Length: 178
Image 1: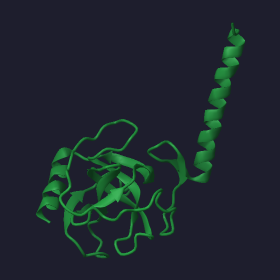
Image 2 (image 1 turned 180 degrees about the vertical axis):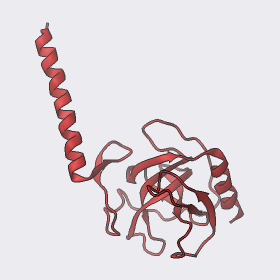
Image 3 (image 1 turned 60 degrees about the vertical axis):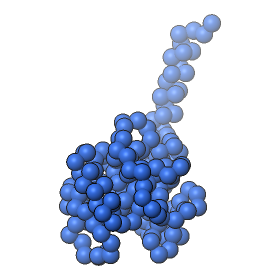
């Protein structure tokens, strides 16, 4: 039978380890992936590559679902930040906000967000989304609805917020039109 002192010391040891682990993550810029494993975040185009080989963008009509939950894993209906491969070269890419719209096997399906006031990329079809926590400056955003990317759950850096159903339905209508 363990004494109260031994139990207390074990509890304090666990707390100290958790505090040190959190401090180390914050000091190194490591963020938690959806699976709970740490991975360095990056704002540059040479961010860590995908966790597994990218099978290419999704083609065809996706089965779109709206099922955001507050659990540990990201779900369709949520805006996340993930490493998104470039359209022309899947070996290159960068962290971008993505609205999750469904699943394809082990992969999540998503559409990429961009700033509504940016003329940098006028290719594709866009639907105005508005503002949200995915942009700390709360600028107007839009969603590119003619490119559906596959996102592996382990490549999700952060979860920004659950998108409300009316805006999700507007994006869905845009996807079905294209």
